[in-house]
Length: 270
Figure 1 (spheres, rainbow, N blue to C red):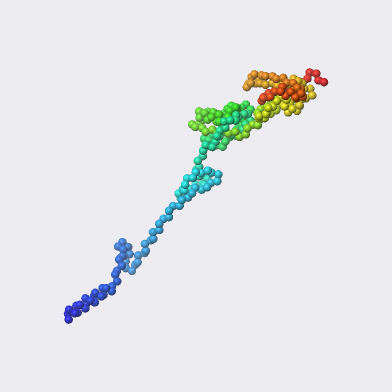
Figure 2 (cartoon, rainbow, N blue to C red):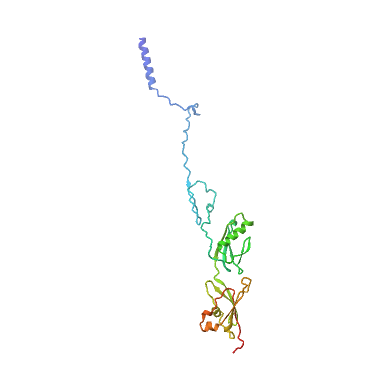
């Protein structure tokens, strides 16, 4: 009987243990594990940070930019869009080495190291140009390329370690020079010679309005030279009756700048 009762007690204990639910393990490091009745808050979810955005360089009207690829976010923060750096080059500028400067030509001169706008200058009647720093320079019969090379050498002597000089022709003087008519003509004074024009003494008489009433048409003089530039003086005597009235144009003379045409009076007027 004792053995049977002991067997029943062991069987009942085994059934009770089988019906008891297992305990849920608690984290060892939880701060709420020792406080009864408190449930620890859930752990915060880990959200991955987004990848940095890639910004393209802004398009600025009128500026030529090189494709630098995408820019990192914040690279343009606090900057003006017009301050995007660009690369400037003078590779497209070709100085003129054909046209020779003359009096009355208008040119633009710029020294790149000064960072100033180009200066508009006019070649004086003496053939000189008033250049910055250097002063008056003879430029007649020189090309823009020759003049830029000379000014570069002068500027680098005293003012610049390295000078970049750009000279370009803005407006060419359409007149080659002037001749002067004096004496028995309708309109005395200067007459302009256009570029590529063959102005003869006979044509100059027509531009002067023709001869006056007491003009000696047979002894018209053309005086050339005698100044500082052309010390050798020349005098041509023309018979305008043959040239203009008889059509012997082969006896006419092609004028040059600064020529003087003198029409004398007749000794006997009738």
